[in-house]
Length: 337
Image 1 (cartoon, rainbow, N blue to C red):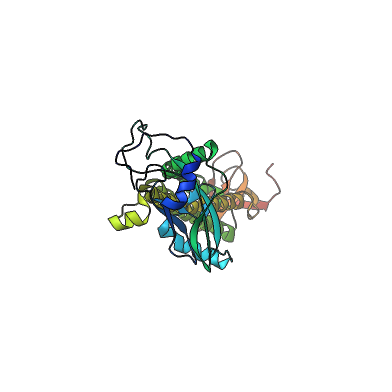
Image 2 (cartoon, rainbow, N blue to C red; image 1 turned 60 degrees about the vertical axis):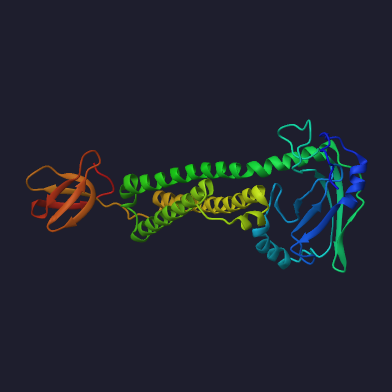
């Protein structure tokens, strides 16, 4: 039973708290004991006797990220496919009282009465989940780790979104590079390529532009999220505010991964387009020494010939157009004199 008057706050580790927790706490597996995804603790704090609740996730997707209830089914299916058996387990957890009672002398940034206690949960297919005496007691290191985890849970959404903003900026720069290459350098640099190479460069740039736009959109939604509605029941199912942050952080991390993949593909396509532009096959230039009836000879690269005219580009001047009827001689040479 809870104390009639809240006891003073104290964050020391007392062996009797861990011993008493075996009697005051209740434990259950979520959603069931065959394929559990989390451990739900209930009952009362072994020190102050006030109501206690905590959910400990069992499925870990990264060193510092755990999924909330709404994401468990997808991940659990993947675990089943690779043969990970969750029908039995032995899990030790260090817990801290988080009751809502107003304990005297409690720091403003703390909750509960300050009690730290260790519990051990075991389950098997033919045995109901139960609490057993744990090995050892909570330590300062484990308490610090719990605090660090709580801080990480509360800040990871901001961390993921800041990372997404940086990737968005990089993708915007890539989009600018693609547009600049296509609009400024592209026409001049690809004009001399063989027909198939010129078309391939265009397709590579178009695909790179599409990937960059897709990645930019993914990074934008990862950085700023998307408006959505939520019911109170869904909020509680996610585990409250921490669970809600985990939901958003997981979604943002997924979109950020898509943006990262799009960035890599964009770079590969862009490098391919630039490489083909620089080193792709080109028709050999034809150098002509043209003798004219009315003016001095002109020597240079043949650019085009149509409609009774030829265009010649001397090495040190602008291209000139010559009328066919004005030509006296037309000689292909290795280089101009």
